[in-house]
Image (tube, rainbow over all chains, first blue to last red):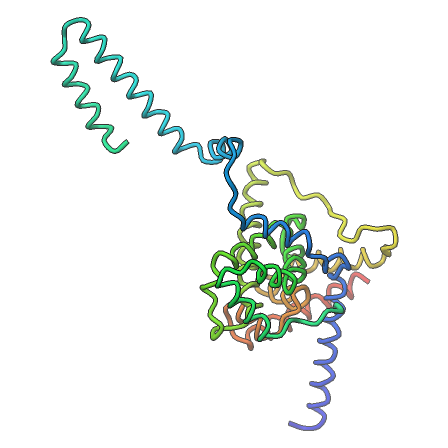
Length: 110
Length: 188
């Protein structure tokens, strides 16, 4: 490589470095260096705190599916119990317990 | 260029080792070392720059949760952190675009990046023009030039953060600078 090529390359590199510096200066704000708030926010999220009732309500809103399934399961159990009790009152006990057993099988694992 | 000195590799690796041991003080040190740059990168990379603080928080929370995954033999701490930041910014922009498309979020408002009466109008205008041109760059060129200018990373660090070679990064930077120079000169 000739001296001229080296000089040209060095001048170009310098120009690139200057360009990058100007760009960095354009993006830099004096307030960027203050990380106190960022630090506080991150550190507070790393601490495990006791969950309040409000936070649990927040879960219901953000993850409705598991809660809806639980609620649905309880409703089904209520319906089944109601059916068993009403059928027993009518003297149809055997069929009622049979249906109840089927229902529990379907809901297995709930 | 900002006045602060970039953290040394030895310091950064020691901080990461402490972080992997669960020392919260190390997290504060890591934020002091890389927080300003990561926030700056996110502010320029995100469609809605006001989300930069959230992204910066998420970067450091992930670093805290997964500190043991950092392998010093595979690259600098800065590359590891900026890789997380690059991916988070992509996710945020993608999700934000969808949310705006379906109307959950409104379009981003023009933001005042340099508040304060002392800020010169010319500097604001130059920043706005530069940001507008950077937004039109291909994604990889945009990421490379922002990691260089906002994150102040070296070519090797950018290569690690983007998962490519140093030569490829140099090419991306050359093309990005050429486009920026040409368009900004046209507008002046």
